Image 1 (tube, helix red, strand yellow):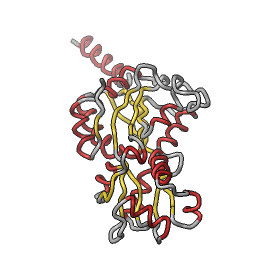
Image 2 (cartoon, rainbow, N blue to C red; image 1 turned 120 degrees about the vertical axis):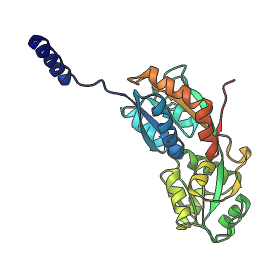
Image 3 (tube, rainbow, N blue to C red; image 1 turned 180 degrees about the horizontal axis):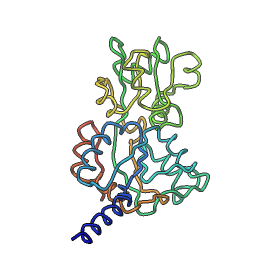
Length: 267
């Protein structure tokens, strides 16, 4: 009996010294405009997959692309524009992937979501359409906030300015344009009324409780597509692919739809 008890104690001591198996940490780099939806999805996914912990890094797609390029740990990348994903995809046009970067796991890349580019105005500001904004930028008194040129929402805004034949540099020099490093910064400036209006995504307007006064047409700035992919530097490619597959499903789709995203179904 004493020998058995001693053996049990010895086994327990050995087990106590063995570290518990760590959860799989999936590092997801995602556009700042996905902050609210992915945080909601995190709770759902981790409940259903207790061995997986999602670790997010939200920022502008351009900043995330640079971090990946510089060697940051990342399993899944979700961009707010095709350009930043193409810059990491060896199969993309060399005119876009100018550095020949190869970070996308081939076969994993999908078009995940569609968003809308919208105009929002600070409370009390009479900027009720893109046409009105264009007129004020040409001949009136207005302060517009837009994303930097390396941020997808900024690139979409540049296309809108070009559509109205407006000179961005001249307007910025005239004090009619200010900038945000990502869409959340633009949203905050409008919400705090430090600017008259801003160009942001429909989803950010919804999350911030801002009223959309106008929506850009595809002719003005093209479609707003969010590509997603597993990276070929992922330490957990199978788990990363499983998470990406979940994002295309009905449960995640309901979360995305709740703030105005449209889930893109594979053909």
